[in-house]
Image (cartoon, rainbow, N blue to C red; front, side):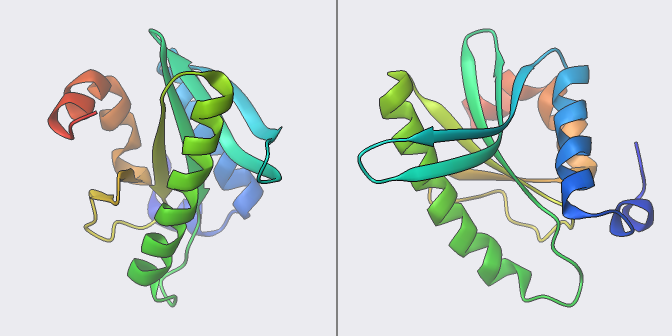
Length: 137
């Protein structure tokens, strides 16, 4: 897996691709830059991943070290959680909201949205069922 310094040099688009590839290497089927429309309007989720009947809506965040990331991640978690609720209604099944952040800000979840640092993503996916149970999904 790439190191933080290697990942810090790539664009946000390349970061989204790297996250998608890790999901696929862990046997998730993915839809990339998934666009949907409902009564609220048009929205996009970076990656919609599915394995064993479980749907995950992934928002990849490539924040750098100089941003006030904790407050930004919390704001994004609220927005992403709402997008995933909307998609859940369209799909008629639960979509678990997950944010994958380039930097570890010691947040595990916020308002129902799971926050996974990029360097822990593979472990999260290998042990996905355990984490989902532990976090109450």
